[in-house]
Length: 604
Image 1 (spheres, one colour):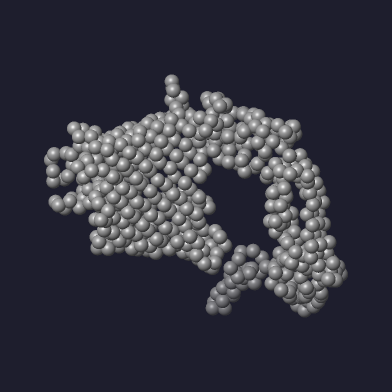
Image 2 (image 1 turned 60 degrees about the vertical axis):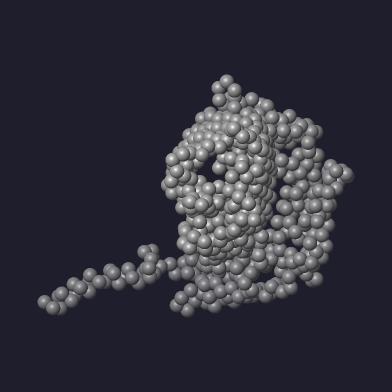
């Protein structure tokens, strides 16, 4: 009986043992014995290229490969390897192949490559034919193509670098004035004996093109004049691919259109080439609901309704509702279509209840004026009425102040990329003058300026993730008026919060009154320095950054009374799909407490 049970167990185990022998460890597929193993002995760059592209690699798994067929493949592999190595600039390599027959296992093939001396560029000749050759207006473009040639004399020759240099030169030709340009001739003359290369490239520009009339397809509710004012492509101007791309961006950014696609009709007369524009209009109305939270203002609920063409006047209306712990606000703005200079009329109103310092402020604001937006600069001219009713938590009698003012504001942006800048700067300023309203009218002037900049540190690849940098910002404001002037608190200043002085709550820094309450002041000064460093994972920069920062800010009713409040801390940044996410843990030196700050997005 014991022998019978032992036999049964052995029979049950036999299929598992057989399967284990036929299956590689950790896989469920049968083991395929290779026809041969390939061992490549060469410098790293050569070995990597041959490993990825050598034709011989395809035949390693063939189980029915005869010795004669393998010998034929090896002879072919030598020539294949020679051609591949030549793409790296080695045209006199020493290549040997050794074949060790199979002895109970796969054969061993050893490919040894001694690349020899790398070929260097000895001379580069770039010639032009077509309209660009003798066009005085194209002299700068010809010089730019030659000056930025990426494979100059002295550089090592590789096929990839040669192809890339030609394509770069062609792009520089066809993106400005000559959209039908082409490479009419190219030659890389290689001398293997001297390891020298002579490069020749001929660029045929074809005709110079100028923009003609705009041909628009896809309009239903908007008129052609709106498209022309947004696109700003003037008939008669030289063709520029950058101008067409910028026009597409302006059209899609306008909110009137979901998509815009612009092409130049190169079959037309080059002096008046038709610009073809295909549009898809956005929905006439849009409602956006939002739910969020921040450390400054707690949970947040928002709603925004947009009507792109209000009946009767044809203006755009944007109405917003905001509810959070500190602010309840509802407002609307009417904006006209742009004129030929991209100026728009704008009228807006805002009703708001908010916590400013230790005061509860109910305010109303009416504004009317004109504004202009460009890629780099925004301008705004407007007249504004302000009314604020401030109530201290310990006071039953509200304080009411009113004013009317004329204002000019602008913002300039020179960042390398948005919304994730790593270099550049932005500067904005507001200048206003007006008078208080009430029994005693008193004149005042209001000034506010702000600046932000990024400065790269050390070595890097020039990208946001490539190196560390300093992120700096500063702001200063002043309201100049008699001490007796009663101004709306919305025209004065407070500091503190995520984008001001971290370590303090939103609007916690202000003027401290005799009863201990905090109110807005007439003078403001803030500054921040932040060291941002990329977080590397497995030696590669990731989408995360670590930061160390110091902030300072002060608010007072007189310049001599400005006393800085300091905040220091550490944080993290994440380049999320919806914009930069800011997470900071800050210590307010004056408040003597830690505070967590979280913010999403980049604005200036």
